[in-house]
Length: 290
Length: 98
Image (cartoon, rainbow over all chains, first blue to last red; front, side, top):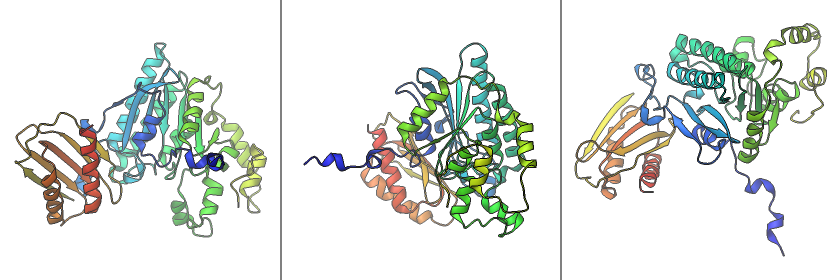
């Protein structure tokens, strides 16, 4: 009897979520084409964390990899979710901005260089306060400068998700790719509960959180472009597709009137549920809801 | 946060490669292992958990009882247990021996 035919596909697939930030970024590139810029051996640590009694990381939780994807120049910038919640500080922000600006410089002289942001982050690093906020502004400005020349692709794989200031960077990027495990939102569930009460949002209710912030809902609402399985090969193929894709004629962040009208038209006299919102706004997908 | 330093002058075997493994996540650490610039091996640790100098010493005494490379080891630690520390060190040794 042939045993192999009974092994389901998920047994042999390589999980992307189980990889750390560096491995995730490396896995997107064509074999042997990539190198890391300002890596851990350059010791560009946060000068602020040790002053507050916190051990820093040699790369400040930001990994920059330059190479080729599907034969085309690309740079991947990954935030390491396990270090300080993937938070953005002075050094990690500067690395991100510099990498995006170099991609813009290359793209402007005809060498189209796509950028992939692997965002696993709670947003600004509170220990670096204003410097983190400034970093978010700089990153957004750099994404806006690059996107008319080359695609800026945000990949949120999970399980930290993408929240706070960096969700704005996701919002202005050309394409957003998510898994079902990933979440995307401006305020995280605990912040909403803290500010508006447990009746507004119960941050211990995982089904509720994923029904609102989850990848399936975000793609279903049209706020993200592709839903991918947690499979390193499939994610690599999806990213390759977007690296080669045409530039968008119009970006979500420019559709102020469309989204303004949509929000104005909502009936808030009764509870809006996620599936209705999807049907109203965009799509036919029905999965991922309780 | 605490900074801890150790010297192991008996570790003299020349090393040519370098390694970086691990993440400064809760209960984990990262380590840079490189050829030493001076004689012997030197270890410097930055840990967010205070008061475990003796445990660190015990872990490195054990590590250098088997390993004799003249390396510079730098660690950023977020509360790795002695077992995890040894595993990360062995992982780094695996990379430089490749």
